[in-house]
Length: 261
Image (cartoon, rainbow, N blue to C red; front, side, top):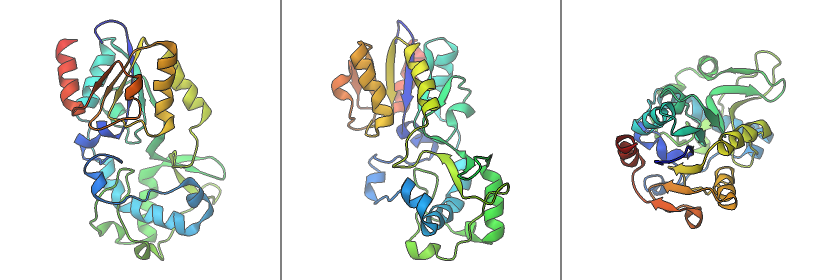
């Protein structure tokens, strides 16, 4: 990274030091994960009950997470002109909290809620208040936090959970994030390509690149002859396209980058 400017693509491995688990790391592999699918959420009341019942429990801890040394290092590298910006697959807003300015949230942010009927955007904290009014004491449960900001609950535990509707039109509310089986909005992808095109190389941090929304940038970089560097604890889908691959803790690597750049 000594010469030229880089775009950084970040995944869940960047936020694990902040207490947010990832999807495919060593710790997550200990337990089965069954994240909500877009079709299930939009077509099934039971699916929405399962999602929001778990989200009510997990949201307070997810919201309170603080940026770690990697988020801070990336914000500083951007200030130094080494990084054009960050394209993140994460939905935790920690890059923004750390002071990052040029940021594309590929998969949205859990801090926002969108109505599937009228498109109104609202605050997740406001929805938390409404859901707890409808389901008193639900947040008193203590279970394990999941990567997508919800918590682990059995199917039988969410029966009877009361859902909140859009305050404007009465429509179905969905977190403003991209679920599995849902496409990234075209304007978001276009903004990400803008950051990518302005850079001389691509640095991947904390992503296994299993999801195509991130892997596409590695593939394009290889096609255009842009150098790719990958820092991740574990295997990645993009290693064959990378000029440099480091199987190492992301935070330690960014500590060193700050020291030498």
